Image 1: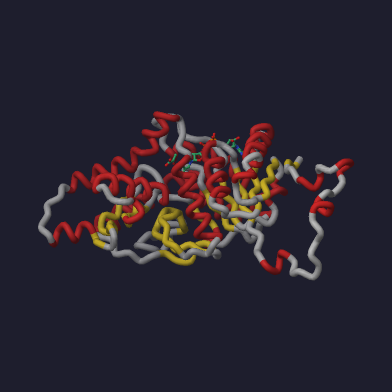
Image 2: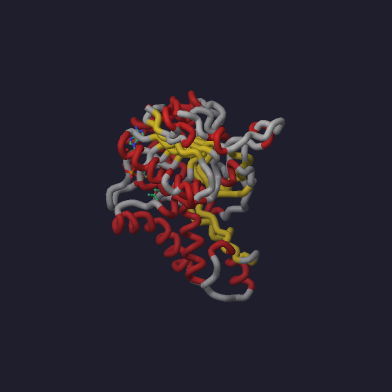
Length: 350
Ligand SMILES: NC(=O)C1=CN([C@@H]2O[C@H](COP(=O)(O)OP(=O)(O)OC[C@H]3O[C@@H](n4cnc5c(N)ncnc54)[C@H](O)[C@@H]3O)[C@@H](O)[C@H]2O)C=CC1
Ligand SMILES: CC(=O)C(=O)O
């Protein structure tokens, strides 16, 4: 059963009233020849899926938004609640169904369905539960939208991005995990807060696993174009390595803290994923730390592993991976992070 509301079906006896209100202008070009129709599907309408959906709507990123969940009532409720905001939002057709046919022809499929962490639980612990769900989610998405980009958000996101790549049969440039785009925002927030500057002026990357083994690239931090560590060194301003480690520790602890306080995280991941959706759908060619097939980059060669690297995103998905100069310690930590993910992945036998 598909749910959607259409004004044209509201006339007496199902009469199409649109013709009565508007006299069509003849000989105009068909809409398809003037503007591309952009369709986004969001799988899972829990805290995360809905934060993403509402950010995509407010930022006018899609012409059509399809929602999928296993719980039919919750799904219809969420669809209606969003549709009722139509008078305050850019025009977007919103549809919802438990049947994947509703996602047909999507440009971007965002997967947020699945179990989330209990307070204190690690992301990696969710693996078995969520892999089982993905076998019901990824094949139908690939079937109905064979040319789409898959953007995975459910945890553990790096391993589930690998699983989605395998299950979909898509080329790796069209399978992306939201990865450390969120961790990097938390990192930039903490640095900006520490120095009382705007987080948008802070460039700084967290790479590797979206989780406990993530890696802070201290050498990449710059503020308004000034590379911070080399600036401090040139000015002979002393800084404690421990201060840096504590900021990274705070990034890793961020999700645990929010989950222990409110039960889940939602707003920051909503903005993070909408930010990725914009770069992909609008061909922004922006660089984001996201989870991609990392084999062959930065000396990672132990197997097919997805983890976050600074990646250029555009309409074709992954356009390339930035070649940042890493210190020996950063390289070593990144390879350790890859090893952590591969060890978990090896339990899957796929
Ligand atoms: N990558 C990241 O940075 C982040 C990832 N997450 C992850 O996102 C996921 C979702 O988190 P929440 O939205 O808070 O959880 P939630 O429990 O609020 O929502 C999960 C939704 O998935 C649906 N679902 C379950 N099985 C399904 C299936 N087979 N098909 C379709 N829908 C199904 C449920 O009905 C529910 O509506 C979790 O795995 C969480 O760890 C959360 C925050 C950030
Ligand atoms: C839950 C999660 O992965 C996050 O907020 O980082």
